[in-house]
Every structure is written in structure tokens, then in C-alpha cells.
Figure 1 (cartoon, protein in one colour):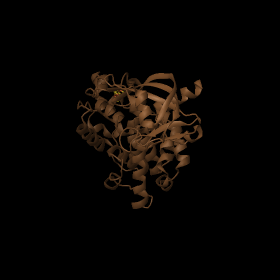
Figure 2 (figure 1 turned 90 degrees about the horizontal axis):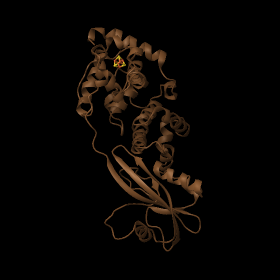
Figure 3 (figure 1 turned 120 degrees about the vertical axis):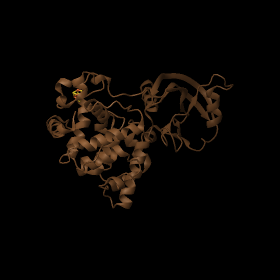
Figure 4 (figure 1 turned 30 degrees about the vertical axis):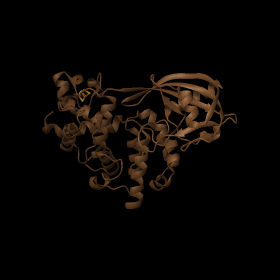
Length: 354
Ligand code: SF4
């Protein structure tokens, strides 16, 4: 596309968005806090999955002040199942800065908003354009795909520094009168029409400006080099029950994957160890094994990591206190604890069987 067609491109995209946009709960508001929450939830997560989480989250934490004051455990409980839990913690840290430094008002300019914890260039641009109608770029995977095709950009989108090329392109093309709808139009087009495989070019509102369509090769773009290799880890997971009917849970470390969430004790399966994982459990958690039963085996996929889980139900006798960061809980108490999806899967299976 040549930049002299910019006006027509903008108009086609914005009009299409106004007519065809999906009816989503965060599109009913211009509140920058709510837009922020929705954008954080939508990172790495499908729209259909996010909708009920967003609605519940807004009922629980309707204002920045309420979220800022919420205990982390309550926040993680609301986020339970969405994954990438550091997003939730960063969101809360950023919102606390807004409450403390900006009197509860989300900054309306890029330099200030970008300093908030967890707010990267995309989220900053999305909040500024959607909530404040500022002509700012908001480039995610969808936008890069659409622009790589429209403008025939063959830079590798897996290379972080190439994002700048797309940000510059948006700043060149953006409709300064309708920046909110322009940016959302690009995102929506990428989600609904200009899809990774089989883009629906015949239904596309910007087809006549699209270089890849005119050259007949949309599916060859964007260029994206292969992802890093996935790591596979094998674990034994133990649903441990004492004679009082309580269950043993441990809290994950403060940093890293699934930080601060609660899980059933799990041990990596290693072929070269002398002790079984049950005996490691007995020593670490001061229990004596009475009975053992196999539950389910499955794999859980993270972005660059796969957990292969073999789970067991163990009935035990307690011979000492649980170590630091672990404890015995009743079923009712467990309902209040944030647990990662693979643990919930084991727990649901256990409850069905028992
Ligand atoms: Fe994407 Fe096809 Fe539209 Fe071009 S014409 S933007 S390739 S859907």
C-alpha cells in the first residue's frame, strides 16, 4: 500500500470496526483502569476465556483503590485458571503506584504510564488510545500480522527489536481523529479476518490496499523464526490425606513460575535416585505412608515447558509438623487458596473418585 491511500485505508478500517466489532464487556467502557485489566487478561489468553474472568474481577475489584488494597491471595484466587500469574501481581503493583503516586488516575501520557510496573509498550498504547483516544501505537501479534501483509514487511517478528518497525508503521498510518477505533480495528481485523492461516481476504475491508493480497502471498507473512525448544519435566504429584481428613499443600516460592500458589507436594521423577519419591515425601513432610492409589496422568503445557504429571492419592499418618510454607487444610479451607490449573485438575479428579 502506498501512503497516499492512507486516508481511504483509515476510513475503511474504522468504518468496518464500528460496524463489525464484537460486543465485549470492556468495550462498554472508557475507564482506563478497566481497559488496563482487560488488556492484561487478554495477553496470551483467548477472548472467550477472558470474558467471565473480567466480569468477576470487576465485581470484586471495581476501582484501582480496591484492587490496590486486596490481599495477594484473593487476587490470585480471582486469577486462578488464567495462567501467567505474574501478570496479576504486576497489575496490582502497577495499580498501587497509580493510587499512591497519581491519586488513583491512570496517567494519560506514554512516559508516565510506561513507568508503571507491568505496563509494556503495547499495554501503554492500548490504554492511551482506547481509553484516552491518543494517537499512540499498540502493536501485538495480530497487528504485526496485519501490517506485515498490508505493507509487505518481511522483518522477522520473533526478533524483539523488529517490533519498532511495526510501531513506526502504525504511527505513520494511524487515524489521528479516531485512534481508538483505528487501533482496535487493526487488532479486530487480525483476530477475525486476517488470521494466521487462511485469511478471509474476500471479506476484508482493506483488501484493495493490501500488498500481500495483490501479490497473492498473504499466508507467507509474517516471517517468524522458530520458537525455542520446549523443555519436558516429569513429576510425581501426591494428594496426601491424614486421618483427620485434611490435605497437605505447599506454597510455591515467591519468585518464578506460579509464584506463591498452593500445590500438592510434587517431586521430579529421576531414574538415578536411590529413594523413591514417596520416601522423599515422608522425610520432607514428616508422614508415614499407609496406603497409595494411582490417580490420573496427564501433561500440562506452559509456553516453553511441559509438565508430565503422574498423580497419586496417599493416606498417611502424621509423625511431625509440616515444614515451613506447607500445611494441612480441610476441603473448605482449600477453596480459599489459589491453586494452579494442573493441581485443580488432579483435585477435581480426586473429588469425583472419592
Ligand atoms: Fe489480511 Fe487478506 Fe485483508 Fe490483506 S486482504 S489484510 S492479507 S485479510
